[in-house]
Structures are given as structure tokens and as C-alpha cells.
Image (tube, rainbow, N blue to C red; front, side, top):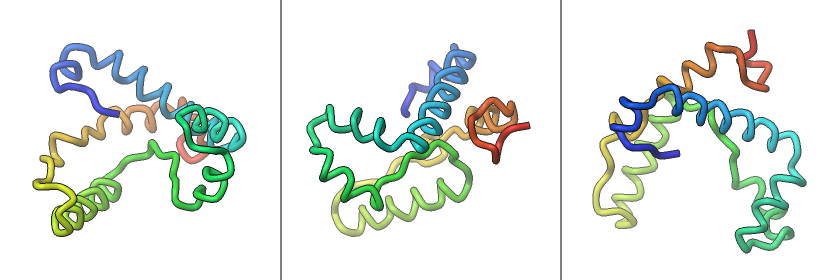
Length: 115
């Protein structure tokens, strides 16, 4: 999800609640693929296409330094292919503090991050 820098500085509690809601929704949908596909199909992609493409899709929230490295590599490749003219400032694009806070809270549905 993307939010503006001024929103982060003015409403960090709201951003934290938004990230936690995203985490919980992601974890829920990982365990309920039928509901994930049903909701996704509302955007116009037929269910049979979603079922076939599932190995190329990811429900993700657990961003870390490795995630950012992969995003940089993807950006570099996209620029080399002419898909994008320039890459973003990854230091500004990714603020991992909210994900780190949710992980530390133990409030996720993920056993990996529960206290």
C-alpha cells in the first residue's frame, strides 16, 4: 500500500492500524483461497484464470530488507527493458517500521510472528 509521507508523520497510529488490517486480511485469504479468488474475480478476471495463475500470484505483507532488495532488482530489470524510465527512491518508497511494529506486537494471524 502507498501512503504519503505527511500522512505517516501526522497519523502514524492510523497507518499502524491500516497495516495490521492488511496483515490480518492477507493471512486470512492465504488460508481461504476460494474467498480470495471470489473477491479477486469481482475485478473482472474469471475464476478459472485465477486458479490457473495462482502459482504466479502472491499475497504478501511481510516486507523486510530482502523484499526491498528484490524490488530494487526488479526495478533495475524493468528499467533495462524500457518498461520504466527511472526507478523510485527505494529508501522513500519502503518504510518497514510499520511492518516491523506489527511483527513485534504479535497481533498477526501468522504463527511465525505471534508471541
